[in-house]
Length: 245
Image (cartoon, rainbow, N blue to C red; front, side, top):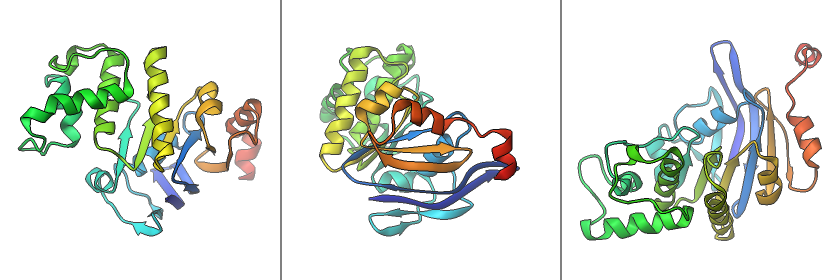
């Protein structure tokens, strides 16, 4: 469904990704593992249209995908929920959820349908009640994250990217998000999941890719490696490995 082929990205002297290639299959939850600085955030930004690769490319459904900005990626069926909570604080919860559907100058969702569309999207990601009329900036951080998740779901994405989104959520809401991930995969969608929690990795993943030092160390089915083996593969490069590399 989606391929990253030989992608490299530098920021000055810093190599964020180096000739990275990963195949992502429809109908799977594909987890990306890696320590801080491994290249996970850059990969997410590349697959969201925020940054462009220096070399390599993206293949979507067997064809080269040349989207150059977030709008192009969203139009192609991508939706990303970033680790940072991105809301319009003075606008209502309903307006925040529908930001991905409304235009800049007019509302594309009819007034009579807005509340129900927002409520339905929230119900798919949360058990915690979230008041739809309240300004999003007045909500606790966990509730704001639920609003951002609902915004992504309201777009009905073919590819959903979740970047460390469960850390702020309570147990019940985490469980609801996990149910959503499985439901999307069962509908032949693709979920890219970035997490540091090994319990989540082993419970949710169909496939796992490990990044280290900007390179893809391995991609494998869940269960091939134990949690300890995965953690070892994620470990930062030693000085000797860096010199050899």
